[in-house]
Length: 126
Image (cartoon, rainbow, N blue to C red):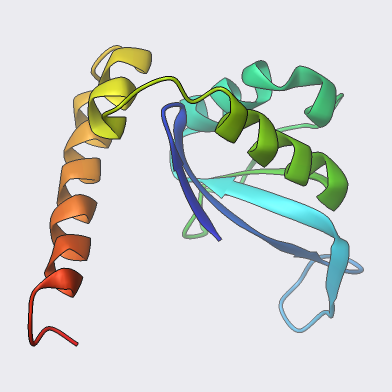
């Protein structure tokens, strides 16, 4: 699941059992929230501290998402519900820019994603 928020971009997947290495079965009760930017994970953890409790941000510089945090799936569901409940804006990209102090790289990336996804609604783009 990809989640774009005013706090940053996250990829959430089921964590793996055991040592977490590739090939291990997934743990459907534990979520690994990954981000490419540390401040994005920090912002989410700060936004929902009770859900992340004492979760540690793990740095994995040799992976495609350099920052990870683990939490129980029910806690992740509450984080998502909380993020949806706090929406009070009518333009997501503008809100993200204001929330992150106009972090240009993230806002620029949001515009790029918007443009790529916009192509899906063009006639004949299927």
